[in-house]
Length: 324
Image 1 (cartoon, rainbow, N blue to C red):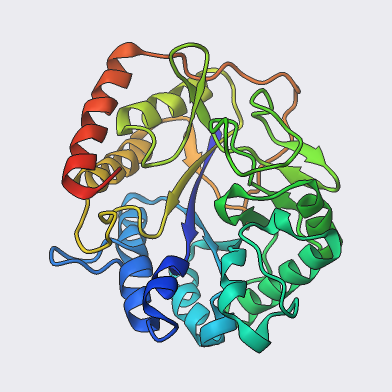
Image 2: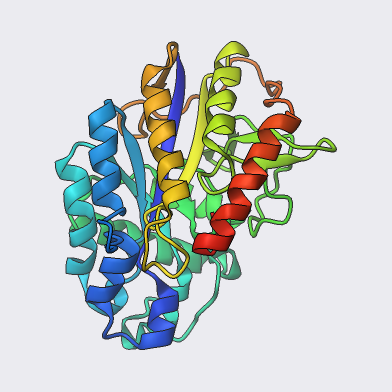
C-alpha cells in the first residue's frame, strides 16, 4: 500500500496580530482556525468532518507559539477537536510569534522570521518550549515537526534529534526558492536519515522544462493530486506527503469560502477514498519509512492538459478569491 500523509499546517495568524494587536484571539480563531464564513465554516472542523465521512486520517501540524501571547488555552482550543476525532497532532512552529511575546519569550529579546535564524542551542530551547506547550494543550507527545514557512536548516534537524523528535518534514523539493536551508536538493524526494532524524520531503510533480511543483492543495488541481498518487502507487512508492493549511479553503482575506479550493479538497478526499492500493496514514500510527532502495521514483510527468486546466482554475480563484 502507498501511504498518503495529508498534512495540515494549523496556525493562528501572526499577520492579524500585527494589524490588530494582541486582543484579536477570538477573531483570529474564527478566521484562521475555524474559518467561519457566511456560507459556513471551512476550517479544521469542516476538514475533520470530510475526513471522517470518507474514512481518511490526517496529520495536523499545530503551532503552539501563540501560547506566548494567549496562554495554553488558545492551543487547547485547537488541539482538542483534532484529538477527540482520532486524528494526529504533530509539531509546527512559527518563530514570528516571538515578536509579540514580551517577557514570555524563552530567548529573552531574540526574535526572527524562521527557526533557521537562530543558533543550535536557541533552536533546542524553542523546540522544547513548543513541544511542552503542545503536550500541555492536550496533544500526545509529538514525534514529527515541520518548520513554519519551511524555514529549517540542518541545525534544526540536530535540535530535533537533541530533544527527541524523530521526523522532520520541512524539505520541499517542489519549491526551488523555498525558505528551507536543509542541505538537500530537488532530487532528494524520498525519506532520508539526516543528523539523527528522518527527513520526509513534501511530494511533487514534474512541470514544463524539467521543473517541479509541490504537492499542496493550493498548488495543484484535484486531477493532478490524484494522478500523482496513482503514479506513486504504480511506481511502487511507499509514501506521498500532501500539504494544506487550516485556512486554505477560505479566501485570502479569510472572509469568504474559496469555492474552487473547497471543491478541490472535496474531490481529493472522495478520489482518495476510492483509490485502491492507497491509504492515508499518520505519524502516530504508521510513520514514513526509509525507502528500500535509495533511488527516487520518477515523479508524475508533466501533462500539458492537466497543467492547462489548473492554470484556468487558478486564474479564476485569483480573480474571485485572491488566490488558490
